[in-house]
Length: 377
Ligand SMILES: Cc1ncc(COP(=O)(O)O)c(C=O)c1O
Image (cartoon, rainbow, N blue to C red; front, side):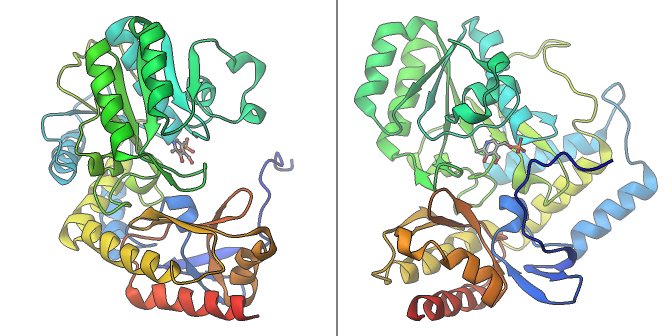
């Protein structure tokens, strides 16, 4: 049997990792500023994380949601505290797409409406409704097509107001990334997020903050939507939550009332996933990693803005997009092949930096030195 060939991959076999360093099979070290796509939040194989998961595995790895799982409550308490949403409720699942799928469903159960507003260049995942809200026709299968999703231009306040004026009573939810990831590191403006909040309140629609990539401290605040000083009704999260252990969740405002069977999953909230997520939050809290993301991120952004060759530097904290002119499209490949630095990309020519939240200034400098050398040819 061979693999179903859907991923264009780098021919590198990573066999070992620690912090922000990964090693290939030939023992070559690489600086990881990609974090396996914004997933590695506290660094690879963090000792506290390894210890927590190992201890849990030795006790019990899995049982379904038919019994008491106290570590779920421990996770909920800690997440409420670190995210500043202590009165919200937690539903656990397994991935970002699933988190968004559940959020969109919950919104629709709540207000018995069908229409969703999503935005240009949005990415919300690959399950049926999440992908229908994703602005990429090439990954929407015919079976996922629906007239229920209305796409509007990102950050266009007039278009948003008009849409609500035209069919506000039909709009179940608005889903938006605080900073678009796949879309090229583009921030939702503060005034746009505030307008979404106002219109959702006015029309009894649900504000869903997709924080799968931009959340969990990456932006320098727990949710990047927090920069707008607003509260969403549902926050979705995944990537950084488990530092590589598959786990997703939605944080749900108190106004939503749960009923048995309304949402559900076999694997979501299992002991092992919760142990991973608790360990991540403990490290984020103990080591002030959100503050570190803000500090090191600001430093990197400021330094990158000094390069005239870059078309634009976007983002906040450790979610940074370096938009390059097409003649510099080779830089990302050079970073990997000549300097052994992993970065992410957004098509066509944006380098995405999504490193662990405990990235140091020294690592940032290592990147900046390599970047300078490449530009100087
Ligand atoms: C903003 C956003 N939402 C949702 C998803 C989907 O997450 P997953 O791949 O875990 O299903 C992603 C994945 O890249 C994402 O960036």
